[in-house]
Amino acid sequence: MNKTNLILGAALLGAACLPALAQQKPAATAATMAASAPGTGTIVTEVMISARVESIDKAQRQLTLKGPEGNVQTVTAGPDVRNFDQIKVGDMVVARYMEALTLTLKKDGKELRSNVEKTDAARSAAGDKPAGIVGRQVEVTADVIAADAKTQTLTLKGPKQTVKLKVPDPKQFALVKVGDQIQATYTEAMALSVETAAPAKK
Image (cartoon, rainbow, N blue to C red; front, side, top):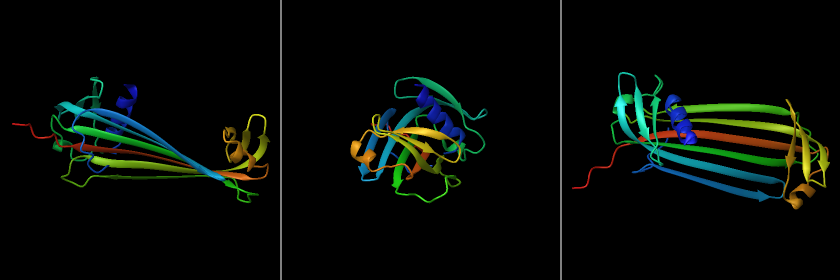
């Protein structure tokens, strides 16, 4: 469960924010979606992991979390994690990670090769349960400098490096020629929320 520990630990340390997900037991789910149209394609992957708070060391600001497979991990909440004292044993720590990649063909592209990165973050208000979100978006414009029809592979020259891109759809590959440009937009976001434990049934 290294990925569970990595996501939960990073979310806590980074004070990452999400509305309540109402998870009442540890869980791990993943989903991938893909869509395409002539000259464009998008793939989106989303992972959700929850873990139960087993114990709390307030002096050290440490939480012991039990993940969906019964594994136990201790993580430290840094000073950026607001409202740490609101967390109680039995609460659920829910982390959601999303990444998306969109490729867009620009015929006879005239744009300059570029690489632009944006980041954003937010966290819960004072007095609320700890929560937060952090996101990043990278947009790259690259020139198509070679197209290998036999392997359906494009060679793209960006502002910093040259890469090869496999295009499995022959119809999409046929739309591209040397001199075109490919614009790639990569987005990732990590969100964290702490859910109040469900009341015990009588």
